[in-house]
Amino acid sequence: MTKQGASDTSECLLRNLAPQVLGALTRRFRDFAAAEDAVQEALLAATVQWPREGVPDNPRGWLIQVASRRVIDHRRSEMARRLREEQAATESRSPELVNNTENGLEEDDTLTLLFMCSHPALTQASAIALTLRAVGGLTTEEIARAFFVPEATMAQRISRAKQAIKESGILFQSPNAKERLQRLRSVMHVLYLIFNEGYASSVGPSIRRDDLSHEAIRLVRMLFRLQSDEPEVAGLLALMLLTDARRMARTSAQGDLIPLAHQDRSLWDKAQIAEGVTLLSDVLPKGAVGPYQLQAAIAAVHDEAPRFEDTDWPQILALYDLLKPISNNPMVDLNHAIATAMVHGPSKGLQLLNLLDSDRRIANHHRLSSARAQLLEMAGDREGAIKQYWIAAERATSIPERNYLIMQMAGQSDSFKVKQ
Image (cartoon, rainbow, N blue to C red):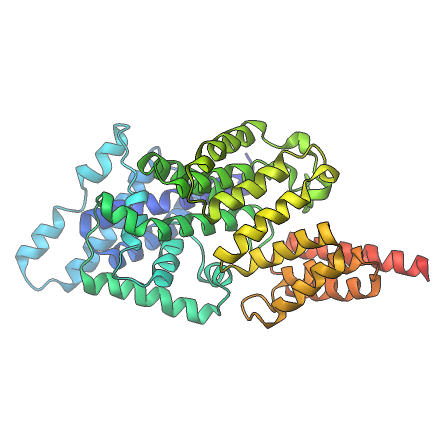
């Protein structure tokens, strides 16, 4: 393995282990803010030492020990009495935290951490933001983009959430059945956002962050085992499986973005599609159809089309007509406009996109300009399409998306010149 490859592997491992280590420390020390600071220091130490000395045999235990020492050191600096200092010294190597991992009895606290961050003492927005940071490993910038707010606003929101946990004395413990049900909507939304960032990364050189999408699927599977009677949990798992099934066809060997219309559908994961369709078929007859089930149904229609030309757009539009009134997501409105264009023509879709110009959450988003460019292209307005592709490329923060938009603009320019 190359040095770069080893570095990428270590980074992926650290990202996957971070929420588990944070959960373990929070359970032990009952101090979320201190635990998060200590975990960040342990991760930093690992990024320095592991490339030089090699990944330890028990990386989770290594991180827990290093982070535990950081908490202990911090506590010692604040202790005024010998009794508290002696008590802290006994915590520096906890058999409960480390030995279980060494014996292959690893306890994954990530799901408990998810529910703790969704405590009713926090506002829903703060809870989701904090969980994306603690469990998803997303940066403040990435979370801000998911919420369509400035980065400074999101930083303040996360800070207030951590302070609220500290002041309220929220305990790190598994919620009972009633508490799980109360917090379920928030937990599902967090996992949905983590998956979306993994499937279509908002920043950076790669459109895919498979570690994030896979971790989201893993956690939703755990959640489904706990709440198998909740239709929307099954719907969320089906949605992730049906969407992730296209992952290998979404990029070229060079990492370039391949849109749905041009993907090699033989690369789609047929087993995941079958599992997602089965989940959806089992849950839809139970009634109480929610947004995740409807989105999963839309994904299933796409996945079951042998070719892009065979896509049942009238059915997709009908599903969006059901989804739009129960969703407060501007991306749903955007996709509804595209589906409308595919059924009733680009002019109808463009009319709906124009309504989004007054929505501050998406008015300056590159995907609105990109969608408008596609529909203008469908309508034969190449000059208008070029302008919108250029605006979209300027606003895109993902390098593969930006490159794709520039290529689309260049293609329209060539066509326009030939036509002239």
